[in-house]
Length: 194
Image 1 (cartoon, helix red, strand yellow):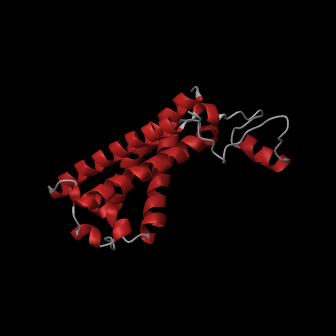
Image 2: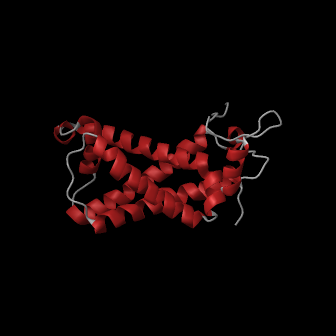
Image 3: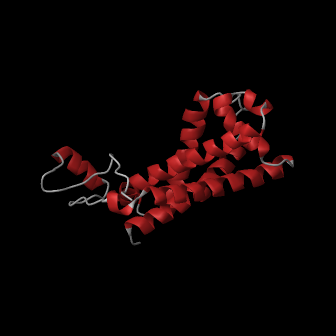
């Protein structure tokens, strides 16, 4: 099976040279010629999907445990809440089909965030040096993107006022469930040494 070619990868060859400005910026981020990020060989769709399914599973398990501790209820409302991003209030009154949609949306989002970090991992690793720092920064990034950019644009019903404790728990879950596993997999794929 042919590997997925990703257009935002930086490749260097004798026929292709970066301008001085781009080259300097990449060197500041830890890239030094030759730029041989052959994701075509190292990062294939199976690795992305498998890692995305793992991070999605870790994230949803943490969310279900927290939800059960807070409410004593099972996971169905979580998945209906996720489905409400597309279906609005109808998701809460809908059938089990809404639960299925919530599961699909959840894992699709997890796979997308996983793919993004795996693609940019060499650059991030060059700048941040440590997988723990990468996990923390990426977990915070995912929380900010989801809560401040994406969710306000969806059909999810209005949420309660900002709660620092809930935000910190959510960030912690994302650091552990998404940031850390993807950083570890990225290190294995790209062969970085500490």
